[in-house]
Length: 159
Image (tube, rainbow, N blue to C red; front, top):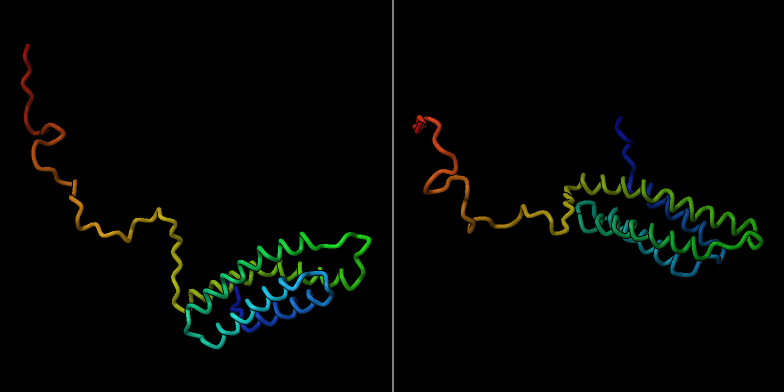
């Protein structure tokens, strides 16, 4: 079953709204707002320049990084139950909901990256396909004596 196409504008609008609602109460420091809104600004750049791979890669990277920073912000700044009034509960709920939606948004942004012609190859130094192998000597056919005896010759038995 094919997943529906999701617009980049819809992803940015939803995350913008959830970030605004998450920042309604001063539960989080300014770094939460700056981090999320700056990534959304990069997303607007990805909307404006439809053919730019750099914009979509930076937006995807920013979304992945804000997943980590949102986890840290929510875990450090979540208020105690006695200090959790309705506005803080709503604000924290929207921040958590935004965090829960981000992996799906990352997947859709990655699909858009692939549609724009991007090719992601995970390379941590183990993939040696790009090396120049012209200086290497082939070992498929060795000169000299073969490793295995020729089976076409008959063996002479000494009794």
